[in-house]
Length: 422
Image (cartoon, rainbow, N blue to C red; front, side, top):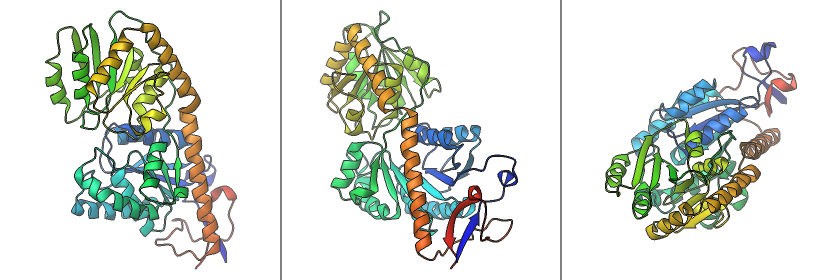
């Protein structure tokens, strides 16, 4: 017979607050400051009034600190690390299963490769629906040799355990389809979005151009190429590098070889990125590969022109000659020429910056991203409800609330969803 599963007992159940929606567990591998973590925090912040949001990650860091400040429940998953490590991966799987048993989510939303693999498998073991956001594929050019070998078969297998796969760019979606990771209908593109703010740049202002790049100091981002490019510019400029990472010291040493009229600033990890962008004239991203970088959207939001490597999702945000310039990957001469052209033309910087701001408002706002993601959540949860009505449900753990057994009827707002009693 049909039964209704009560919501977990809490203050909302007794009239002290508005009942919350379905519980969604966000799972991400690392907690340091990066694009995926910023995206997860945007979801936690944007959905906390509509869904009961919970965070799980492999470490403490920026992401967990910010989540707790939002009042979000956080869980650590021992063993969840970025590198391929069979012993750690087994430990991570066990910890993910324990966490899902404890949290009792209605939906698991995984981010980044390792959390995507571990989280989807743990959700499958416990019969909980899962979706996966691909920020960049682990088998694409530039990733480690082990991930390129292991990544495609593992993603193809794990795709079976996800109800939907969100790609942050059309390039990522088409790459997966071309590799036959899953049926094309399983993929949906939801471009990243960033929350608006009042900080605005004046790209054409100032006598000494200020160039800025915001990224971790890792092989992918290739700050060394940007330092080499600006060193070849004959006029004074200031290059500001925001971020931290294992290759920062190498970049500092490379910057020391720049001519005297080139000043390079290393600001480290910062929380005032919007203000730093507003004080700049030009944004550059000399990356080797990307999914869909949030840093470019932040620059467009500020009204900055963008010079970036012509890779994957970057070209979906930057239109060459309109709101910025695209250069070939690792093309030092092309990057130098693009910088030279824009620092010499304040009017062009102003025009491109204004076009970037318009593109941000029309296509990359936080509201658009949240609406599309919410639609994926709702479709997935409705599908779960439909399936549970059409076949017996054998829960791998007890879904009943601590206060008592399942009941036949309950107020609509207090239901997670209805299931057949086995």
